[in-house]
Image 1: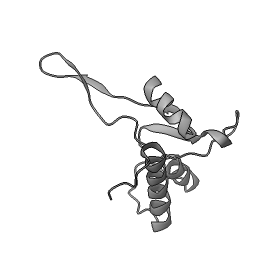
Image 2: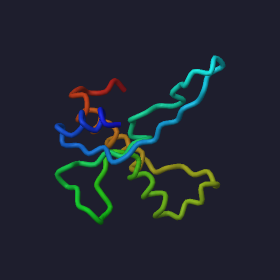
Image 3: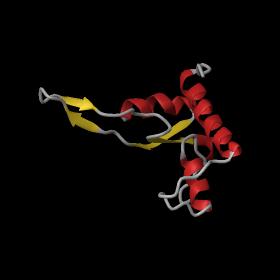
Length: 107
């Protein structure tokens, strides 16, 4: 976490938190069980707009979460996301990729 947060900071990004999932393989070795530091499992905030005590602007899936909360999604009923929500979410993921890597993603 510290290394990624330090990498992101000079690029104007705060790594607010992240989730890592680990397991043990058949030999008893610790293994990383899922992706890490992606916008799906981490929260990235623009440092220049960070303010204590308020919901932060973000470059991650928080936009999608907020949309689902706004429509009262019950996490059970399948739904089709509006194209605008899909496009806006993808735009956030592409933007953080470019900020962190300095490159356009291969889509």
